[in-house]
Length: 264
Image (tube, rainbow, N blue to C red):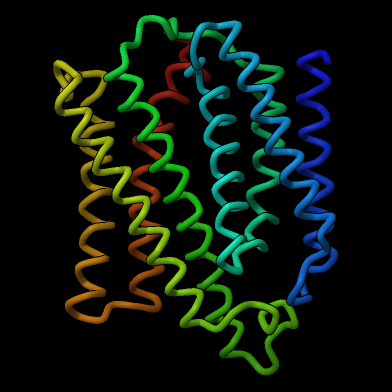
């Protein structure tokens, strides 16, 4: 099958799954077809990525290709999480974004640094960074959903969608589970960066390093604060979103400026 056709089918499945979730968003259980379409979309997205990986002898880390890869991993991790946790409604945000990123990769992706130039150590650093970002991306979306739920529960009456969500305590527990897992990968990413990258504070890397460390400090501080001081609710939501903003700027800030604005 043509690689473009695979991408188009994946995008269509992402969007169809999103529409089904939106249509049944007020219900406690979503149709099985929504999950089938989501798994189909992620599988086709993976096949598309694998074909490009083979053709390029490695990953293409240009802006849109990286965004597409991260979106695919986020969608996959969300589907894995739905097996044990009621987070499937985050698909209303994640699946359309994954489809859009795949479409942008299909139309605008360019090859940057040759993948063969990266050794196993650099690939370890890059892939753990991507996984960390993906997990913390889901945590940020969970924080937004938790904020909406908290706000709606204070109104009378709250919208039916809010009633279909798990309790605030369950939603908050899920948030901290995602944060904990994401921090583990972010820690591995930072350690591998310090071990394997010759000058992590070089001019073109210093902002990424500093922003990533700040994000790590914020997320870690939040976990320590929850354990020692019982931080939760708005505090947890605010610091999760602030930490993710730093991480977003670290991962995509300079890449967007260099590739999309300065065309370097």
